Length: 277
Image (cartoon, rainbow, N blue to C red; front, top):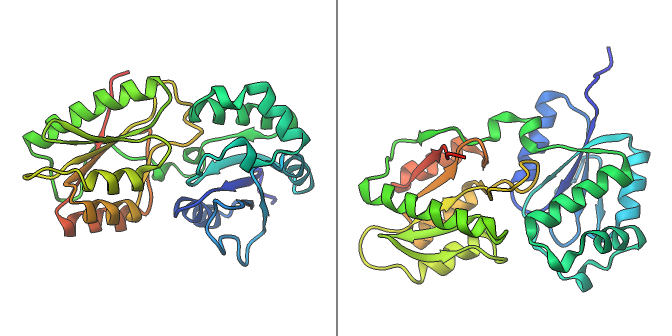
């Protein structure tokens, strides 16, 4: 009997998240096709698998590919460095989309929503969230691993959540690092790893800082949910951070067992925070 689940198009950026989703599709026996973003996705990502490489501005090629491969659902996953309009080099369809949504006037979340809506209208596909494919990627609520945040860390988490919510309202970033009540850094265009490295150079004496990652209040859960994995833990260890708080149910924990094991070994806590809407 033929699998009724539609073929999934995976628009892949950088980092481990796309590989993890590919492995999940293989375990679920779900048909997929990988669209590797040039200059973004990791080299060799699609090796031995159905894939193609496309630049960010290839809207018409993406539409034609979706039709040729009978792709009905698309997930966008992985780290994507937001380029300038000159770097995108949009084709006629991409230019039409960008003109319609006003790229230079939007933050990351609004831009992704606009691109997703255009894909649904122009290519006839449904854009879904990675959690719709593999729910186990979502961060659960509560303490993960053997290390628990102490009272100071809990205060830093609360401070970080409040700052991150304010940033999110402005569609700026998802991550904040707080140490003993002081905001060491907030995420802008540089991404979480760069934020961690920068904040590591600013840390004070005493207990290390706490990384807080939450979704923007207005964020569409299909796009760019806050994500951590082993690479994040490696950066945190190097920077001397003591823990990370993620929004439960609205963030992704990649390679969960490995990530938690690394945190336990380093004495770092990971906690899922259920936020009041």
